[in-house]
Amino acid sequence: MIKKILNNKPLLNLLIYGVGQGFNLITPILVVPYLVSICGQERFGKISVGMAISFFLIVVIDYGSDINGVKDVAVNRNNKQALTVLLSTAYAARMLLLIAIIAVTSLLFISVPYFSNEKQLFFLCLSIVAGQCISPIWVFQGIEHFKWTAIINILCKVLYALGVFIFIKQPHHYIYVCLLWGMGMIVAYGIGFAALCRTYKISLKRTSVKQVQDYLKQHFSIFSSQIFLSLQLYAPVMLISFFIGDAMAGTYKILEHIIVIFRTYIFLFFNYAYPRVCYLLEQSTSQALRFWKTYNLANFIFIALCMGMLYIMAVPVACYFTHTPFNQPDELANNIATMLRVAIFFPLTLAISTPLKQLLLGYGKQKYYVNLTLGIVFLNMAAMVILIPLFKIYGVLLSLIVTEIVTIVLYLPAIKNKQAGAN
Image 1 (cartoon, helix red, strand yellow):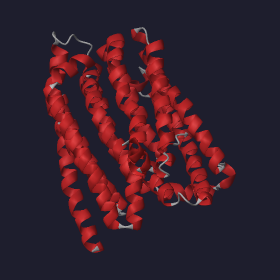
Image 2 (cartoon, rainbow, N blue to C red):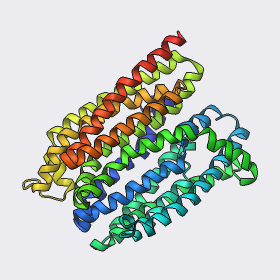
Image 3 (cartoon, helix red, strand yellow):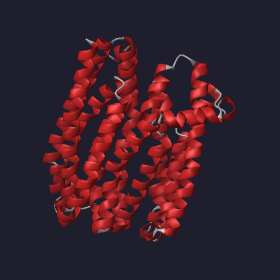
Image 4 (cartoon, rainbow, N blue to C red):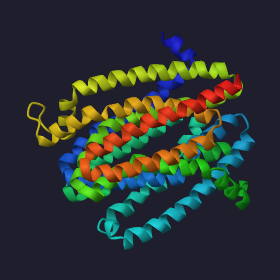
């Protein structure tokens, strides 16, 4: 059995990738209850807003590299010279974007009251953005070097978790949580980036201003869709904080941390399968579709079983994350459990829309994807602004679920048309 797994490269890669990415799922389970118990619901809400801003800015740094960059690396994996130029150009662009982000956000954090009231927290959040600038993950995904991906993810999350348990001891320490996340990224990603530099001779001398400009122009369309898509992911906690306060933002974030375990898993599964789907579509459409169906059907069944268990175990799960005795759930735990039974429909719909996105992008339908994403995000944001004051957190859940259903319905015709044209 073990020998068979070792000889099956795709399965072995999936297992290695799964072990590494598992730490992304385990870390919130360990850290969130501790932070809630030490910092309290309201300060946890402030941490959550800081994290949301950081993760939004990460999308600016990535500039579509998690989609187009992975695809470019996957297609050129056997051309070391081309990869050297590609990576040198990409990391030069990332450095320019980091400088621009620091300049703009510094002005906002100082001058806008919403940010200046917690400017220490928000400035320390920029360490996360700095760490993402040197992230090698997208490159390792493109060349399917999953052992390095696993090692880096494990190290990053272990450093963060240890930092939280060692240094966060008082409620006022909440401002350092994002810094600890960022330091974990800088150390772990720095090791991987150094390995890339040695292997591919990454240097500013191997690119030019013109190549960086062309890179930014070429990736702008996919970046614009990703930046609006990230609003859909990270805006809810900021909107809740703005409209109904940090305490409710903390409540939502506890709920989201439960659901985000599965959302993260779905996105990580996308990152694992996407380069292989792109590569196989270049070789054989039928082989690519077999791979896509096999892996994504198994993944959906797994998600469905997990959501069934989560529905049944909603109260104990809510008690764990709120640091409440299992046999004596308080009002917060009961409220989160009720919301959780509604929220489980979001991962179910996401487990359908995300595989469809693999095919859509693999078929080269980036323009359709960008236009659709922009429309969907504007619709979702408008719905949240209207529904949050009326239905509070339930308004966010309703808008997220309906948005994914609409996305699925609109993905299908484009994929079918492409397949019909290929036949």
